[in-house]
Length: 605
Image (cartoon, rainbow, N blue to C red; front, side, top):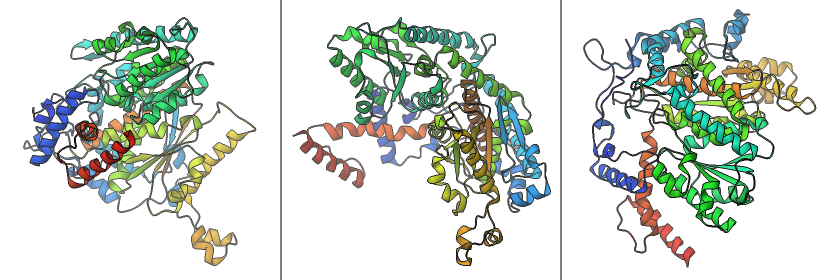
């Protein structure tokens, strides 16, 4: 019995779908979308009910939900008998060895999780009933797993070896991928060598990436993570927020003559991205005091809309393509990562792709019980659905990974933050966790108090590296000591008897007691290299895939981000037009618009 949808699912052409709301649609299209959504809201028509059922059939043709499976019911019964880590380690001296799994240069110690052999058996059975293995093969085969948009899900093709064949609708996409990679490499080498210069003949010193969502979070995270690989004399900066302060702060101390902009927008119409790009173009031309011919020397594009790119002033020879079978949050290893490739170099970028590929192969080939992403995903399901833990912390003990938790927030929460199954029915169980985190040891002096002694259990991934990129006075030893100590303290705590035996006053014993039994997964690698980063990101990509398969949701669309954007476009003229608009919203929104208009009018006077 499989719990995933028909890959060729059809979608009803309801009015919302006709507008084709996408992140990259033009303003007129978004305005039309806003009107359609407003009409839907006025008529109180349920959005979810307008999708055709696309789920799997049970024995009598009915749609089957994973929570009705025998494995789910068995796991529910196991959850009634909680695991004690103190007891588990006392009874099994080799527990750490048995629950440690390696793959693609990463080592994961799962032993401090609230699991047992029987729980792992139940989770493996759940994965088998959900068809995880078959769905993995369907993804790598290029089937249209993104049913609501009728698209393949092939971010793995971005790192496929040049000798492989990966087909999408009968077309081998590997030559396309490597063609773009080669063009990216050539361009990056020209910038790095000084062959590419700006309009005044000066070398490029700063690459400014203008994008949003997956066109920002992934490249920014990778740039920070790979900082030791950045070429001297080059830097990258990132602009995403439509708040003008973001662009202003980014450009404030830059020299237009030595600045190169990478504008990332598939259709080159994304509202936030194009607003920032146009204002950046004005900044450039004003700063250089030249005409628009300078744009072509300071702007390149990651897009598929040659006409719009050309109209902006960018030479289409410097337009780098990506494809609709790659979701934005899975795309920084495509042309979206051009800014990263320029500053770290094509060699380091391709090393990162090798790391992605190594984990892809591990995910596809390793048995479930030795499969890092699958186990990480299944244990997350155990916490979310059977133990009722709503959040998950990712705590890297490496400052270069300071943006890794933010990147994972989008990867995980935009993928699996769904309440509707692939067949259009509402889920009867919890789905995506709230993902958050900060680098250690900063987090220890902020929120670890709640993790250790709070009333909410927060499973956490602790990520560390055996070798430092930089070490000063042996501080890496101190960092790693903190990493190992936190995992031990969270797991085993300190009992009242142990606190009292340490000579603590009786009235302070309750305050100094740590219950322990706080679960963690320890993920270690030798060093944070481009290869390691690729493997680490791929690990979490496939963890998300595993969980989405278990829950029966589409991990590759993001309709939840569209409604607010479409309504925002409809509201823009209501804020800016000379005459006050007719109230068409709820009372609160109408009042907020009126208040803003009053202050805006005084601001412009």
